[in-house]
Image (tube, rainbow, N blue to C red; front, top):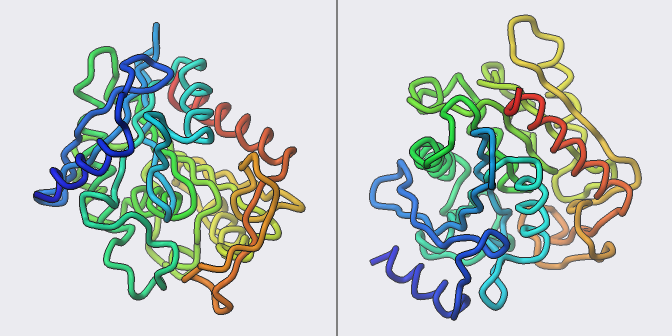
Length: 283
């Protein structure tokens, strides 16, 4: 029933979906969370070298407009496809009866990063079954709450990660909240990890990520950990829209946060992501 409702809502948002690479194929993916099936958009890469990435939306859910993903998501799909990397965008909220969790406080959220981690490992298993995709060339990419899900999915100290039959080969998180891993004595990435933060981010501040990545980078025996902090940049620094103050934020004391793009950080972070995935998935 939950999946039916999710697909009905997507059907309203997507009256006609072209089955070409620019628009993506509408698919269904089984989460490891029992009974949850995820609507998703699949962008296979023509002539790919077997690499594929699962991409995770932020707290506002997967953005769909007139039969296509939002421009920001399509930008990444095209960018990764052009690099020979297939992409699967998944929707974690609609099957669980939510459209957005941005205004909810972290403590009150019914949908957690741990649940979405189960979505990730279901999606990785789905990717590994696709023609032309290689099990050992899979990545995870996410923004904001999706970036936090990337971190949860990276943590090999958790049984679901350690015991997974299909594991990621590389992980990239855009402006995640890092307070949990900053306080964790057990967090250890299962694969090379890139985290990118905005120096002026007042929603998911950079400092916990900076500390956590520095600590992990100094430990012996772990996969590569990279951290980039973009000066003069707020939450959502890869957006094409200018910064604005958002007033419906449940994750800050004031209920507000500044969100919007920095043109230089937008381009540099995209190149950093591509270089990271190319290095770890394509070689």
